[in-house]
Image (cartoon, rainbow, N blue to C red; front, side, top):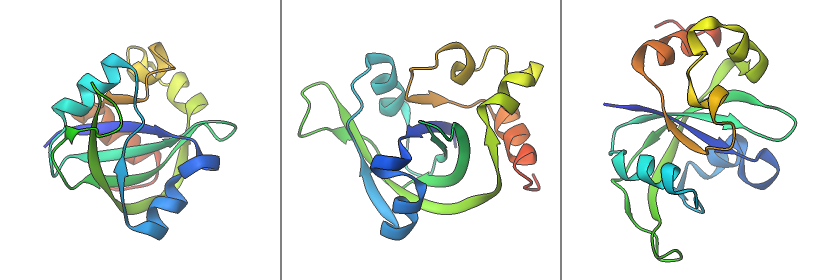
Length: 135
């Protein structure tokens, strides 16, 4: 199992909408590096949902429930189905992530425009603890 972080604009389709819908097809990713990460994702992988815009925080956990398939709307894109798991007890802000030396090389800090990125297991565990979850 791998871990990922997906960015979502809460004004367009945020974690609340995902919880309401329970599942959604994750699409609309155009960046080649982000598409490459989506291609590497597999059914059963876990995802942190990060809200962009004014919130700038990791807010929830979801699960990828389908392997990636070609995006019917974008020639080189891929999509997968995402299912909501739970809202985190406390959001983990970008400021808190940037303040922690362990995240110095994390793509969320180094490549702020990247919308899909892997999360190494030690950083996943640290984010879970920062959010108030037991690991």
